[in-house]
Amino acid sequence: MKKSKFITILAIMIIVIALFTWLEFRGLKSDVLSNTIGTLAGGILSILFVFWQLNLDKQRQAKQDIVNLLNLIDEFPSLVSEEYLKNYLRDIVDDRNRFDAVYDMLDPYFKELHKAVDQAETSLILLGDSNHDIKGFLQDSNIVQIELREFIQEASECKKAIIADKPYRIDAANRLEYRKKRVITSMKNLIKTLENIASQEKSLQEIDFKGITQEVHLFIKGYDQVYQKLMELVGNGTVKQRQVNKKDCYRQKDFTKQVHELIPTIKKYHAKLPETVARYYKSGEQNEDKYKNVIQQVLLYKALDKKAEFIQFKRKDQIGYLFKDKPGEE
Image 1 (cartoon, rainbow, N blue to C red):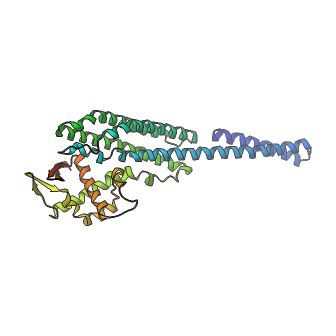
Image 2: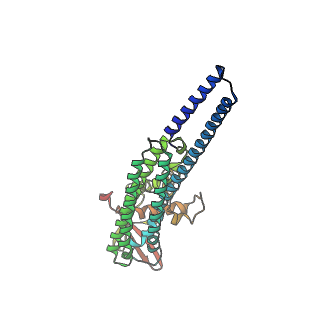
Image 3: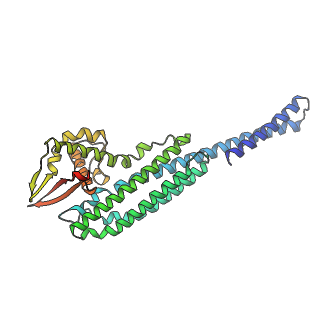
């Protein structure tokens, strides 16, 4: 029952009770009249309780459906982590960390996201106030699904590039990273729209939007800030170029040696490891190896984002990683 219709019925019943009560007060006493007043009063209380219960159920369902959608959105950055794309950039390709397993998860993820969007939409409509920006939600959720569908198409085309020559692999990695950023940007817009809707509905204001979607909001932002700090270390001469295999590059380990310089920035901007790497550390654990791994992931992300060149080399049994900054693209 819509709120306006309920208020109309309630007002009519109150007027009827008031009329009967007035008649009884004026001397028109009878058992029939008393029973009628009692029945109407009980009916109003029953309807009030049912309306309250239905409205409460709608609020709970809407809150749960939005939280489910937000959790699903927050999985995406880790679902297609930069770590999975590393092989595309390598000079020496190995069989570890192939993209095949990730690609096989994309279509089921898309279907689950589509279902979650439909459920959230239905719950918001049933919640029912006209001030809800349902149209904005529909527009933004459609854009998310379009961007995700295009990403999946790109991933399908790039899947076999892992066994191609390095230039083709690098091109595939850059394309995938570009599409991934577009998906995440559209997801951020959808989250913002949901926050606006929640600000108009008291029952939804309890949702911790920032806490639930921290992977989406902090992953790239934190990496950008850490990379800026790394470039400051290059600028002041703390990290110097070296010539390796006739290439002037920065060694990854020269950056990670400066981990103590980076820890405050990593903490301040919440630069996180993707779940594919973070699972090797205990929850809340803070040690040098973990922070060094964040630095490695930042350099890898920048290589995928075409801000740096990723070079892998092998010396005896040791694998090393080099990075060449591309200041013109920053």
